[in-house]
Amino acid sequence: MLSSIWLFLSIHMADLHEAYMYRCIELARQGAGSVAPNPMVGAVLVHENRIIGEGWHEQYGGPHAEVNCIKTVAETDREQIPFSTLYVSLEPCAHFGKTPPCTKLIIEQRIKKVVIGCRDPFEAVNGKGIEQLRNAGIEVIVNVLEKESIILNRRFFCFHQLHRPYIVLKWAQTNDRFMAGATSERLFITNANSNRLVHQWRSEESAILIGAGTALKDNPSLTNRLWQGKNPLRMVIDRKLDLPGSLTLFNDGYPLIVFNEEKESTAGIVQYIKLEKATSLIPQILSYCYQQQIQSVLVEGGAALLEAFLREGYWDEIRTLTNLQLNIGNGLKAPVLPEITASKTIRIGSDEIRFYQQDQLRTV
Image (cartoon, rainbow, N blue to C red; front, side, top):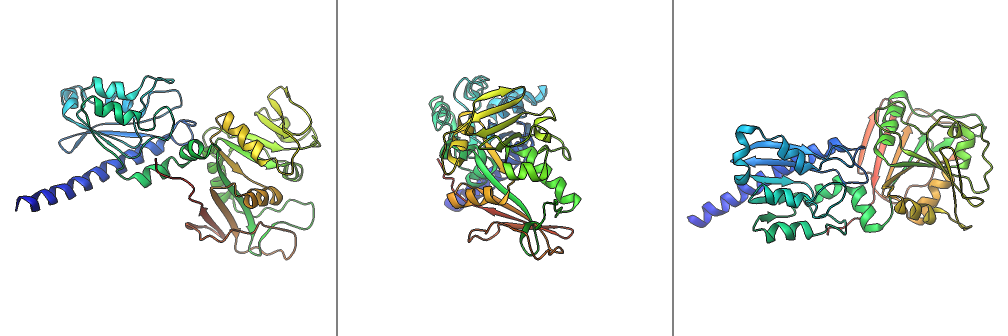
């Protein structure tokens, strides 16, 4: 009888742990686009099945989720903090960075139990936070909704595990799979609402990359002017520095990085990064991004650049936008998708948007 009761309680507690961890993940998402290269983290403080504090990492360089969570505890509940359980979607940091270690705060607050979504892959943390808490006599439960917690911070995990930025390939295509027409005239494929979604995607990534051909033909700004939030760092590949200085990219006042084989210099907010001559510049570009803490890159084309990323295996997500009502019969063919099933499909008017995911991350 006692064993049956214990089994029931154990299952019930597991469900509760997951419920509060889902709330941590929900809170963490509010930091999207604002905390990179730090991870998104949410924290919830629970006393006798009542949430008495919530917080998330809101801004890079600002207080972490655990700090913000404890700050929200009402004065009438502060005496309950030592008897509460802290839920946090990522292992608390154990080192001094831009802020003091969160493990120190947890220990000082005499919290007796901490439930963690997943371990932190960052070398300065990776298990050390858990170890510090346990050495202080705190009960630590790890890997509650581990997969969901890793997916939440897949850019952060990719950066620290694969030592390169997380790469999203995106392109728009007609129903008969052309990216552009046969003439030099620009072809507008997707509708206004789909375009706004693309600008939202831009706001969520650290950088955006195109090739010289796209820069010359489309003269884009590569900003997320149709969506709130910060613009991604704009990057263009121009091997021989053939692009004219009259392009919008060089004149709109936003930072630009030009990867090339000719010179290393700075002209205002345009930075020229000289790379070694090679058949493919992609490995050098990704190495530069890693060194500069650029955690994710949205690659918007054109076709040759997208195909190079696909061919060399440098991608984590693919997002295609297909206008199901537009056929042009001839033009620039869209890249060939790898043999992989879409993880999600949505419709916006006549546009079908498909998401493809490559799982290269691992638990730590």
